[in-house]
Image (cartoon, rainbow, N blue to C red; front, side, top):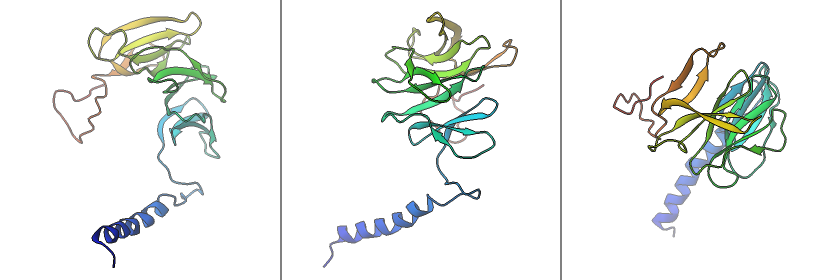
Length: 197
């Protein structure tokens, strides 16, 4: 005789089984449906995150190639203006830090050694990387920092609680989000910590 626990377990597996099969249903173009995040586009290469790794595919479609294989999660890719360098965030050695590598793949180079998460946001036209960090803030809030990979120098952007930055083509205007993401994704929230561009 089956106990109520075993009956409940069988019921759960009966419900989960069809769901897991449907999650792998081929897409209309012959691919597989999945959960794709953080797209970065520069001319033709499109880099995105899924399965805790970074992938590259042609913007017109085709087969996606895995760029990273580390057990840690990589995310938030940003392609440099010349299309040759990919910046991203990863947790290879503890906290989330900023890394770069060739956009075709290769060995990552670590750029930040901060005790708080560092996440790439955008590039400037002259090849400087803008990332967000709490390291240089006097309050526990994110702030934008500009990193020059040639000089390995940093400069804070004088904006409080600014994240998710993007310049226009002339770099005369900087668009950003305030306040930083606070892990609250309540639908249609309009309170005091609602994020604005």
